[in-house]
Image (cartoon, rainbow, N blue to C red; front, side):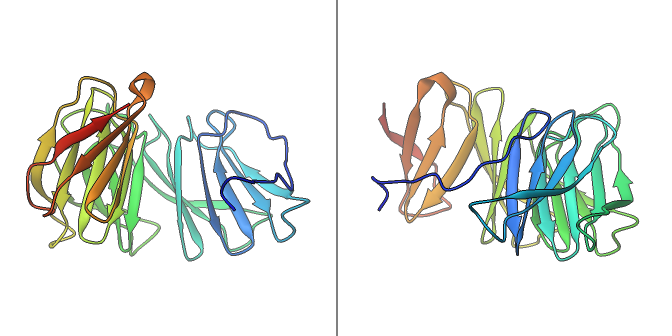
Length: 219
């Protein structure tokens, strides 16, 4: 019942939790300057921290595929962490694109999309390889892969849509500039929902994913 949520557990952690993903019995939390926490959530009422991995800089976003966690670590770029042993995570690879900061990422294995506009092949976790780029236009706050589409929400007010028909070489469909910051955009059916910071929720509609989306409501 979405109108009757009940908190069943909690866990205090160091750092500022920026992002969380759950894979199997574990939650992986990007916790800013504290790095990444790995928490056992097999009993949701009593989560237990199993380990913390201290990244090089500021862990802002995290994704998990198989035995590896991928962290957007701001100045530290992409960090690849072997989490096959949750109590003892080990960094096995990284990718830097100085001076740009990696604040967001999305994964559609074997590709990782970094918010700086880089496409990386991570089929070899020890050596992420740049294979393509996409139009980010500015620092990207969040990235979302939805089928063969990549949505990029930008700090500088707006979002972009890229076609992933060729996943290593995303093709820009369009940029849409809003009058407020864009923190995250998600799609449900023909509608797009944008978290617009202090502007609240913005709703967009399109009968076709290839059309130019126009806002139909703002609250």
